Structure formats: C-alpha cells, structure tokens
Image 1: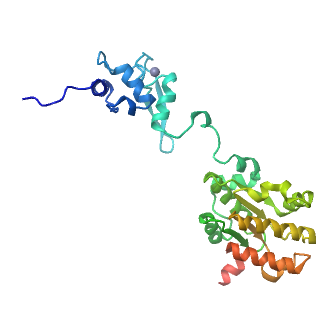
Image 2: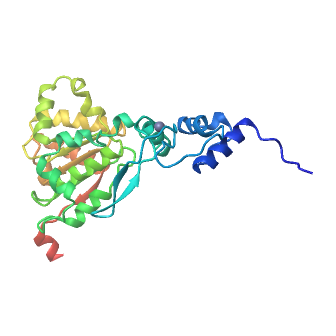
Image 3: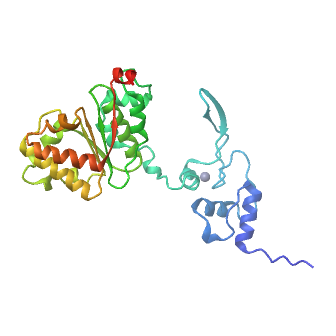
Length: 290
Ligand SMILES: [Zn+2]
C-alpha cells in the first residue's frame, strides 16, 4: 500500500525546480524569497529543463558567455554566465542577504576615506611593517583594542613613533564596525571649541559622535577657556558612555603643565586616567634598553 501523500502544488514545484536546475527551494511558497519564487515560476511546471545558454532564473536564452574569475594571485578561470543581467539582483540578494546592491560600491569607511591624510592611507592600506623607529608592539595593542561601554584609550609617548598612524588605522577599523569615529587634531579641536566657547551645544557632534579621537593633546598650551571647555567635553562624554581616544606626547606632571589652569589640568588628567585604557609608545632607545 502506498501511504505517500499526494504532493502539494508547492512540493511539486520544488521537485520540478530541483530536476531542472539542481537547486532546492522551499516547498511552501510563503517561505521562498524572490529568487526562489522566480525559479518556481520558471521551472515549477516541469515542462522543460535548464540547458547551457539559458538563464537559470528566468529561463530565457542568453547564449554562451564566459567571464574570467580570479582564483588566487594572478590566475583566472573562465566561468559560464548562468543568469541574465536582469536576474542579477535577485540572485545576489539570495546569495548575499543584507547586502544592498545599490550601495555595493560604497566604502565601509567613507569618513576615513575623506579625512585620513593620504600618507597614512597609503601606509595603512599597504599594511606595511612599521618603520623601525615606531613601537610596533604598542601599535598592535592599539589595533586590537575596542571600546567597552564608554571606556576610551590614551596613547602616550614621544612624537614620531607611530601614535598617529596607530589611531588612523584604529579609526578605519572602528568605522568598519559602525562606530562613527571622528579624528580631530587638538589644534583643530580648540579652534572649534573657541568658536563655540559660550555654547558647547553648537558643537554637539563633539559630544555625541560614537568615538572622538583627539590627536596630540597638549601640543599647544591650553588657555583657561580651553581648559574649561575641554573639561566639560570630557565630562559629558564620560557620563554618556561615549569613548574618547587621546594621543599625547606628555605624561603625568608634564601633561598637567600644558594647561594654564593647573587645577583643571590635574582634574582633566585624572578624568582621562579613570576613563581610558593606556598604551605607552616607547622610543627605540627605551625599547632596546628594556
Ligand atoms: Zn534571467
């Protein structure tokens, strides 16, 4: 006795699609995506089979066209094109869900592309080994660092040993992660803060951006006004769990001495020490002595 249930329409379609092109689609039409629905439409009636030169999706003849596909370094293999241009979108949406074709050419880090100085872009994209004067170990620690809640990062050490390179590389990775980092030199930061001295509100993006990266803090000695605004900025970011990353060539008392108001300077140093992980970049002589 044959106990098999008669096939539903959807099951019959799925079986026919599989026989025609060797692709498995859900038996339930409601569970099919656009690509699968189109396969059912084309091959589901079982009246024909796919053959070379046909679009596997809509079934129309597209001729024998081959494209070279890169495999490994320099070699390519010729692969038969199996769907027409009109069907490309549904094929792509099926095999790469979440990828929006209209945005395919858009960078994962448009801000970085725009803001990062070309010399750093070239070095970072080439992923070249750090020059010997750079502290490569410290640089790797920065590279693998990620913000936890509002916790930031402070990079200390003499100038010219890779801190700025390290933060631009980190900024690119953070933007890839969707964190919206903004990198600003401390000089530019204080230009912005001076313009909005009375109202930090007008520079809200400094308060709200996902990660604020301040490069070379203390390069210029900070006026009392600048001290106060920076203090407010850091306070506000800390209280909203928004990480701040700072590079500075000054450490401890030398850092405090960069502020015209020593008390505020001490307070800011304390705030940063509390809210940030710390990576110290050593000069070559220091590393060799260690
Ligand atoms: Zn087609």
